[in-house]
Image (cartoon, rainbow, N blue to C red; front, side):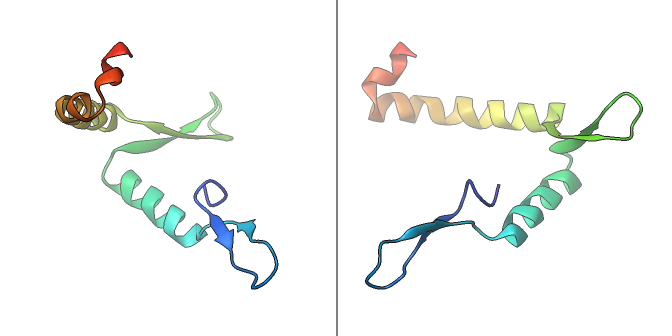
Length: 84
């Protein structure tokens, strides 16, 4: 996630280069989402290998509610969005 949300590094006269974002911010966000019950860790059948994070049913319902609440405004701002 740090690579995904990084940005350019200003190197003075030389061209900018991509740098990773703060790992602490990404880790803290994931911890808060886990604590609030919106995401959980997925493990293999034996429970020995962590396969990543997945949304819980509460997290999915929150995303659905937010998406449905902003959809009318998005349709007003971007008329072509209704094609999708």
